[in-house]
Image (cartoon, rainbow, N blue to C red; front, side):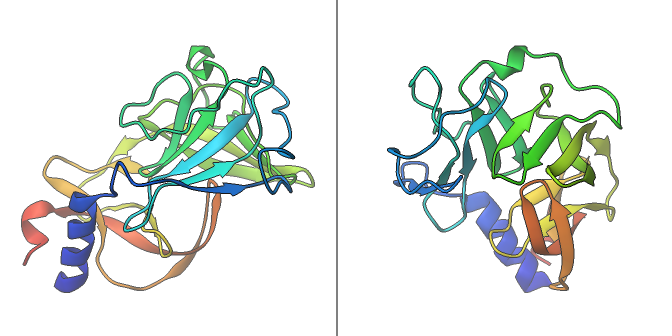
Length: 212
């Protein structure tokens, strides 16, 4: 366990190279900017940015801004009005100032949707101290609520860590001098916002215990 915690802490501290050239992929059936569709409205995400460990940042192009301005493609540490973070290392980008929308309220209110055609839309602004929790799905897509991060204690389950890229989907905030890390390599199926697959369980662990 200690070796795996050491490895993950080293990764968390090292991070990804900020000036690395981004790798671009296209969604919605597009193969290039030429046949990428226009975004259907101001609440539809135009890019997904993933700040990957060990690899260059990944830009997943979803659609072009209707006024043909550039969709934001830079990773930012503090969420701005054109950005919505959905885990510790992944962000949605928008053509418009979605931060000016009404902030999401209610545990059963639909805040975001992932449509079966590959598009991603929001209904309200989910701020950085919140997370997306799946409500339900139907024939057209998956629907998510925006919930505030609760406070968790040392030893508590704090979120899933994806097996492919070690992205952490926090469900609560660990106490000071704790970090959300895996404690073993047991995998389970996780269904998170824009991720379905194998994941580790993260637990709030004192940083002083990581190297022990």
